[in-house]
Image (cartoon, rainbow, N blue to C red):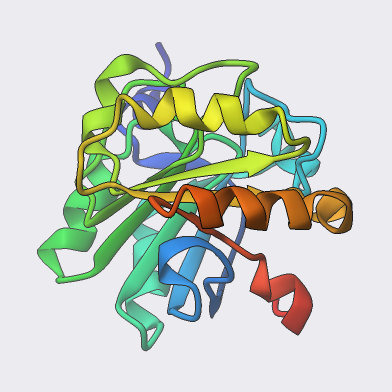
Length: 209
């Protein structure tokens, strides 16, 4: 194993698609200012994914995590949302350790398809049929957010909901391109099953990056 491979294994180098300061647009923390860190590499590859350029990690530069951390420290929100791709393809212990040592809140967005690493203030689990979550992550989820592409996907949402802890928030999120076709049925379902809430991609309506 060469030095670069060692640093990758230690979580000291990560393939970064993009990083930016913005507003969370969906789920439980909609409207919250945060620094976004998008890590490249995904083995789920949903057909409706709006960041398909993140799938191939080799297309993105390996960046020094210490440099990333300095940029995170410079943002005024003191919160970071780590997303992908699938961020749990990588060891996030080093990154999260440095962030928590400096009182930065850590938020994870994951499909749950890989082993959990890192220390998190909030875990949003978004399970995918193509590669279901590991059973071990369900009890750690603070938020279950299931993308609904057709009304049959509600069955998938209900299946996953039986495994999360009782405090976990439950969200159904209409897939953006088909939202007009399914919104009415989704609204009716939530009215009849109020344990669920609807997550709206407000950042797309507001044209926030």
